[in-house]
Image (cartoon, rainbow, N blue to C red):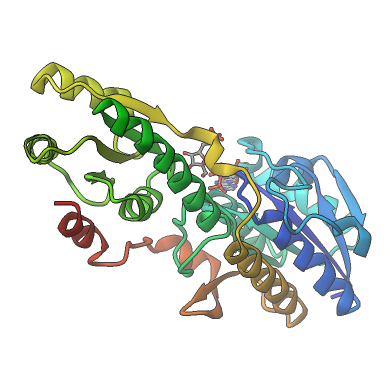
Length: 319
Ligand code: ADP
Ligand code: F6P
């Protein structure tokens, strides 16, 4: 394999740049030319590719976002669009593609692999919702952004004796909510994976107030409901006043943590090795500190799970 390409797709995540850098530098180290695709699958269909040199990826390892930009494209889900994308790659003599993105982007990579074009998927999403890896690139940075934000909110919550509902991202996954909630000592954590009773949340708040607590923090995963819906329910049915804070896209930006940069560098380099070894249609991840790879179609059939016991622990510690 003498020419490969790399793209970033779906929601961006801090560390995507470090992954692009690793793909380019490892590729060049192995004597392979590397092309960058702008704007994910959308740019791929339109032939927006550029040859990347060693210097093209200088000074980016510490930057959030993605120098290749990202996109979501409904159009790419059509068979004919996927053929168009493959033709763009073939026209430039490119023989393999590294896709950095979330599960939707993996589905796209799986489709291209099924159509005979070798692809490798790298988990780039803050949601940490991809099976076959303990961590996705950007998740650790997002967690750190969330806990810094909640720590600040706790300051003002204490001053005013208030209960805050903090809505965090994660799409259908509760990883960000669960782990940030444990890290900030949240009074309640509400995630999609574990059914909750509103009465439990209310009891917890009331017990805290009786015990003289100056504030309470509820961390709510966006996959359950919105913070305003929960606030309305607490007010209308239990006369409990809350303030809400929706952290939003702040969770997707910022300089990647050491963990994310190292993860991205290791996964990016391994992606290039796999393509050179002729192993296509693979999804790369890190499990127990080892770099692993699985069939990308099989990975998409699995469900990502949360480590057992962490939710229970958060309840035990937030009494
Ligand atoms: P993420 O990769 O972060 O999960 P999305 O779910 O938006 O983000 O997916 C990113 C892009 O991947 C989509 O806009 C689309 O172009 C492509 N994609 C998603 N699902 C499929 C699919 N079933 N077939 C082909 N391409 C897909
Ligand atoms: O997948 C990453 C993510 O940030 C999710 O946590 C969130 O639900 C979604 O993307 C937001 O997407 P958009 O940037 O299109 O609003």
